[in-house]
Image 1 (cartoon, one colour):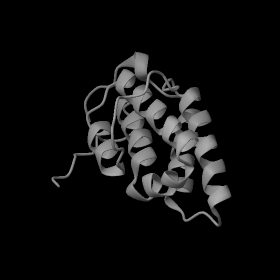
Image 2 (cartoon, rainbow, N blue to C red):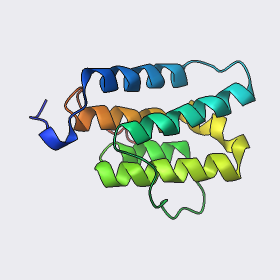
Image 3 (cartoon, one colour):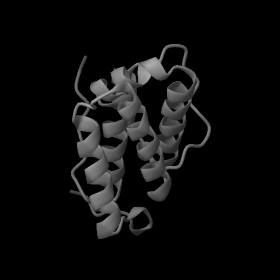
Image 4 (cartoon, rainbow, N blue to C red):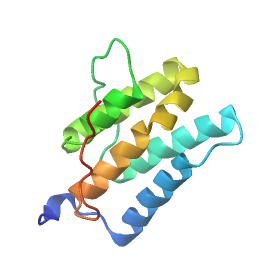
Length: 128
């Protein structure tokens, strides 16, 4: 792992919260309502780790695979834009949220944040 930028550091408690949220997203929710509530918790976690939703990315068709690919090499500002994009998708088209979670979109954002903090190695994007 490369030496992390101290400005991007996460505390041990923040790191544990991010890993816990990622783990919860990876488990199957018991209902659509639970899945949406977990999405709200994801947004709150992002706000606590300096990737609060900002200006969403302009996308015509949002796909989890595209979010995962962009997140793999994103900086903090781009992660915040991805969070905003997911927030808007969840609010405007809640039925798309489970597919985004199943594709690993929010998990990729959290993993990249951990990588930027030097808490985990960067995930290499996979070829389509």
